[in-house]
Structures are given as C-alpha cells and as structure tokens.
Length: 319
Image (cartoon, rainbow, N blue to C red; front, side, top):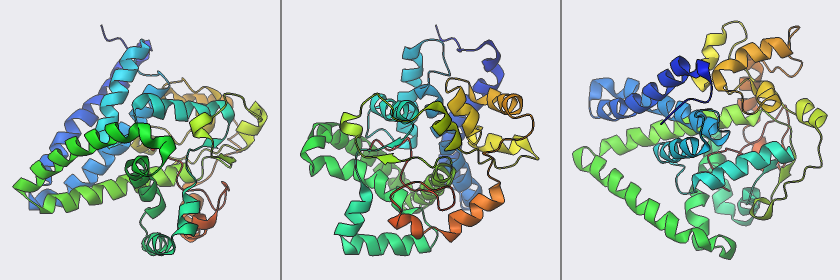
C-alpha cells in the first residue's frame, strides 16, 4: 500500500502529484486549440518542471515510505519528462554521486565535442546567443546519440532504440491530429530545459569530474567545502511562495544539509539554519543578469563558477 514517507506530506505532495498528472494531459489538449496555445505551452513546460523536481525527490526516497514506490514513481516521471532514455536507477546513481563526492559527476565532456566539431560549436554558440539553452539541449541529445558511437555506452543501445521507437509513436500520433502541435511541444521543452538550466547554473561552484562510468564513492571534499561551494538561488526571498514554482529546489544549501528532507519543509529549515540570512544566498536579479551576460562564456568554461555559472549538469541527463 502506498504511504507517504512523512506524515505531513499528504496535502503538499498530493497537490504536486495531482497538478503534474492532470496538468500534462490538459496541456496536451490545449495545444490543439489555437486560443489556448500560449497558456498550454507554458503549462506543459511548468508541468515538466514540477515533474522533474518530483523525480529528484524520488531519487532521494523523499516521497514514499518504501524505496520501491519511490522508484516506481521516478520511472513514470522519467517517461513524462523525456529522461527515460537512461534508466531511473542510473539517474539516481549519478545524482547521489553528486551528493557523496561533492562534485558534478558526469560521464562525457561535451566541451571536448564542441572543440572537436567546429560546425557543432558554431551552431550551439548561435543558438545560445539567441537565448536558447543550447548546451543543455545538446547533452539531452547526446544521451540518444552516443550509445551508438561509443563502445563504453553500447550496452544502452537496445534501451535507447526501444524508447526512441515508443516516443516516436507518441509524436506521430500527435502530428497525425495537427502537425503544428509538435512545434508547440518543442517550444515547451525548450522552456523546460531552460528553466532547469538556469536553476542548475549557479547552485554550485564544484569541480566537474568526468568519471561517472566508474565513479568512486569516496570524496576528496568535506562538508565545509560542500556548504561553501553551494548556493541558494531563491526566486524570491520576500515572497517565498514564488519558490514553489520550482518546488523549492532553490533552497539548495539546506537540501545538501539534509538531502532526504521533503521539498515542502525546505523553507522552514532554511529559516532555522540561517536565522540571520544565508551567506550563500544569491538574489534572483543577480543570477538572471549573470545567466544572460555570461551565456557564451559558459560554452568554454570547464568548471563551475558562482559568477559565470555552468551548463550541462542536469540530473535528468544520464551523462
């Protein structure tokens, strides 16, 4: 029987799940009605945002009492968000490596690919200048492409091919009703990836470790390093309810202090741990300005920086 991990989870977590699993079909239906296009496109993008952060909760076993139930929900949410090319267990392993090793642990250095293929770098740079989250979009695409070209990832080929086939059927079905819906769906996805990219960009000034395929569970960094290199990029300190737009993922210091604490408790925990104000707090205006200002600089930045930020570290990407 399903049971939430915490007694106080029923209302907030139930509302988040209801929003996710009713908002998704409603948004899809809205895409087929021209007068609802703007609203439906934004709704779909935001449903994915909430679904992604619920998946993150599942990775920490923070939703349900039993790990198996968290895993089951995480798998469903990975299909909903398009992160299903990588098994949920692998996504979870990657994210927990991030917490244990106190680094951004990745499998592939996509910056090397940009340096190797000039046309690819040119395209990513142009799209980035136009304001698109091009580097993060590239990493999502690499999850699908690289298993067919790299021996160390060849074991993923069958899964990727099967998932690609199933999702292609879904897109063909959508297009058979109205081809223009695919464009709106893509716009929603770009917004979704952009939101996650913005939230991820400034939450750490960690080293990037490209050893995910054989990552060690040991860490060369201590808890003090973790705290001093982690930042809380609240959407609003004055109006905390706005942080619900990203399921309180922006309270990142307290998340790293207590990784299994459910999302709805993070604001209170933040106040308890930092009654005089969090020294690692980054105002929204500052992060948004730097996100825009340094968007092309991040394409040649191989390490996280609190001012420049970093791209390509999404927990939804299994690379």
